[in-house]
Length: 221
Image (cartoon, rainbow, N blue to C red; front, side):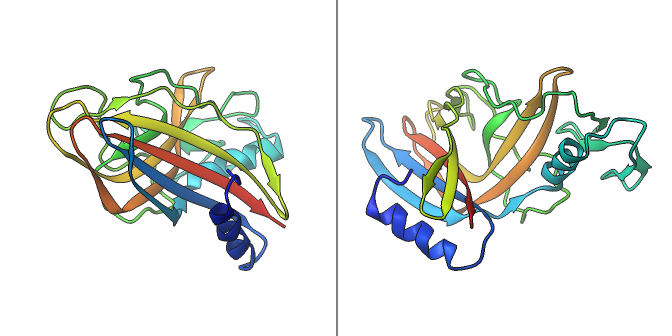
């Protein structure tokens, strides 16, 4: 991550804001020969409410009978978060939430791309308009989720990176305008959106081109 001067300068500038969790999105577009065609970077728009909902339960070590929180459908209920299918689900501290290792073609979790353009909100529970996996019209061929890189230290910043690529084999251009991170609770196979970001400006992925999203989580002190 911090292997060039440009990145060092970028994160040094972000550190001047104040101590915080910084999430950034890098997008890399490569042509059919693997040559980098475009790269741009932006500070991410939004972690969504599910992220804090699940983090709260991990910190409090709560279970379905000891704690009450407000779920996203407005009802007061046991510890809950809203799944990508809209169902409000009970969750407990013994479940495995933050799993991000989907295989090629699996868009039920991991980093996923979409065509939505609505500004992210804390109440988002799914990506707005998912681009499905495949080689048909409007589809991308998703690679497996990249290996999660271990945290790296650079000065006052500690960070790690998530990444995933998808190729366009549909025969026509596809416009990507949003990206999301969906985690898998593997014990009961529940899926939770924890992050949604707009790809701005939107990226047109031509036939046989590949788009990679690299999402960096960094903590400054």
